[in-house]
Length: 229
Image (tube, rainbow, N blue to C red; front, top):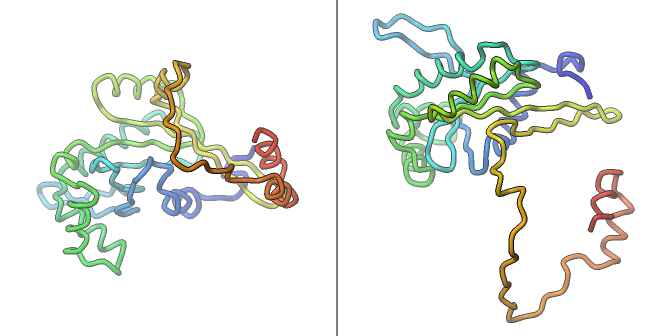
């Protein structure tokens, strides 16, 4: 295991780009709206020098505010994310469409607004109540305690922890949801439901010869999975 700083990797150039290329890290069906957005201003027109790492929309049509840290997060990272959520909540659907179109030049604002409101279910309510996601290599107890309390107050905030590993000349990174923890039902065993017999009997998707050919080009991890199969 290695730290990103130890590997010479940066928050914006590497960690952020990995997530932009793999938005499913933020949740199934998540679409990135923009990144590195810093065009904020106060009611009196004064510019506000804050830079939002990633703004996305989830499969339920809610905006997602994402704050990244290359190492262990500072004790106030959740307050930073709350500040961004407050600013994001004042956007309009038209604003969101314009941000998306600016980050995706091949799409017009009108087309983005149509897609976001119909396919991605963007709405004023989804903008007013954004979700918060904090991503770091570790979180101090002050952050985890605050996040648990915020969730108890119906603030939707998630902690995702990443781990970086050096494997020969490659760097591999895993992302794990640290909080909220999976539902307890995911760890239980219950009565198996009766399966409906298919009309057509199908064979296994992999035969022994296919597995042997796959094993010839596998690494230790995939060999272990093949053994389980």
